[in-house]
Amino acid sequence: MARPAEALGPLVGHHRVVAVGSRLPCASRTSVVACESPAGRLTRASAPADPRLEGIVARDLVGVALDCAAPASWLQPPVAAVTVIVSLRDPVRTQAGELPDDWLGGIGVTHDIVEMPRHHASLDVKLDPLGAYAVLGRPVSELAGGCVSLRDLFGPAGVELGDRVRDAPDWAARFELIQTFLLRRAAAGPRPTPVVARAWSLLRGSDGRLAIGELADTVGASRRYLAARFREEVGLGPKQAARVLRFADVRRRLEADPAGFADIAQACGYCDQAHLNRDFRELAGTTPGAFVARQATPAGRS
Image (cartoon, rainbow, N blue to C red):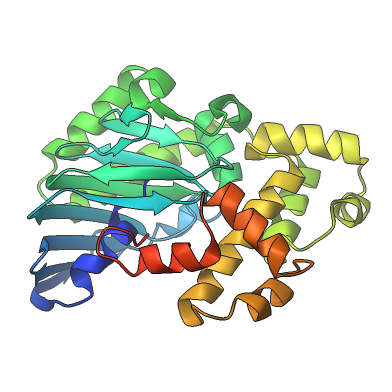
């Protein structure tokens, strides 16, 4: 899924900060940084999630506004989170076409090419899959890794959320609106099955390196039962989720050591570098070396 704020990393690689500010809406601190480079101007806002959203929101809330000289694109591998995007200006496109203004995307196991227009702004929230299960009030598996408009998911409430976020006066107010929406939805939503919650915690803690048989034994469930419930509430089966988590660990390690393919393969539990190469071809659509080279270009980083 698209990750606008991270994907614009090249714009802040060689920049000068031209504005920095912060405010304190309720218990959350919102920071806003504006950057300029030859590629264009980027404003990035962020704020820690309300503590009441622990286990629902997977990371800081992020907002981005972009004005650049040319459209940008980047390769987006799958991520182990559910994405919520509310567009303030022109929406992004993927290989499948233009996305809705406001959408929620499930966890997938394939990569995508995301195209961003010259002028874009959006609010980007990453949900923990089990948090998304509570917010949605339905199986995450129904998303099948795709994007669904907030209108289709939440009806008039989804439309109202997008409109109110766009009408809000600043980033702090936008973050407050979406957090209020998530808190209300999560409070009324289903709780995850205990064995699924435990299994997801163990898989995430091991960066996907825990064998599925061992995982089922640890949580005290049969592999069949665990697979069925896990897929419904997380959106992927345990084996697929483990693969996505492990690949995320590979990407983090590559940022620190872009040439250490063999060592990273061993550290992440791959049989050998050839095994790592297969995962890159299937999850990122390219080789490790080509992936690193693409991330180093202005249009390629995620």
